[in-house]
Image 1 (cartoon, rainbow, N blue to C red):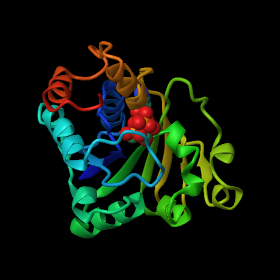
Image 2: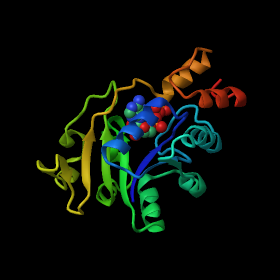
Image 3: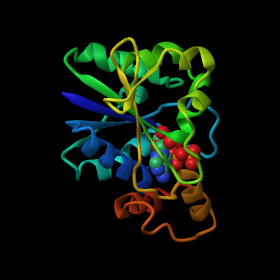
Length: 212
Ligand code: ATP
């Protein structure tokens, strides 16, 4: 089983998340993409809805796609959510899975500040998706020097390889200039968020009076 892991605050989940997960799934023939909303994000974020609300919003849309699943592993664990702990726990739960961590270039360019980033980068395959407003950086520009040297470009495979045998891949996905921050800003001033988030997410937000 090839499993994509799509982590994030998902505050709220939007079409940028969903479309890049869909394209990563297709490009890498993943059997499933597991969406993993964080409990407490490691980096300070504004106006974060409760983990339960973020889980429910994601659940509402993910259930429509047979290749998407929702994991409450970080919410159950509680506290600050570190991706390395999540990947390790998921691999322990099912030893026969091949894991692909899907991440936007914006987040990846800051990975040097993530918990145990050097070990994290050795633990699974990575799919780095582009995102409007964030220039695609080379691997050398994204990673601290000592970590960069852990990777070697494999021209035949068209990706970087780690001595652990895991690959690091850049994937061009359809650029959707959507962010949760922008959605929350629009909601705060009563502007429309139609066609930026699924209708079900919009209905949930209205019903529960989120992001006012
Ligand atoms: P916020 O604006 O609140 O910081 P966000 O829209 O960046 O939120 P996150 O939940 O922080 O969303 O992101 C989860 C993951 O999704 C990250 O890896 C991020 O890079 C990626 N991502 C978010 N929006 C897009 C997008 N429009 N296109 C591609 N990837 C995206």
